[in-house]
Length: 149
Image (cartoon, rainbow, N blue to C red; front, side, top):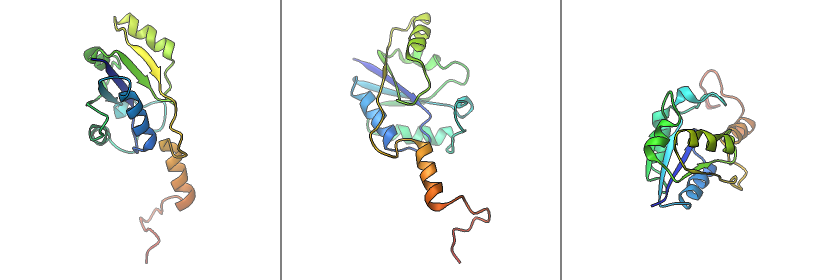
């Protein structure tokens, strides 16, 4: 059995996320997804959705066999427990593949690292979706009104 691990924040779930997970699942027999902990997301703005909700959404997706939250202190701990054959990275994830391979080898993990190409759609990232919402609907009204009277 070929085990695949995909990782990500998965904030504001969109077609690009689904594409990444489908392509990851196509590489093996079992897909485990590690969802980033809120406290560990430091390379971009904090997620809108709390980690437990993001995890629940990922668990509900058809390509996903298992989903879990990442470790608060050691990102490699869940990978060591799963012992995947392949780790996939999204097109815009900030990992350097060779550095990741080296860190895996240091821990005795022999997983291939595969970068999944980007989804061809125009709204393939949470930041693009947020930008489009703000451009078409404007910033939120501080009074909480939605323009209704």
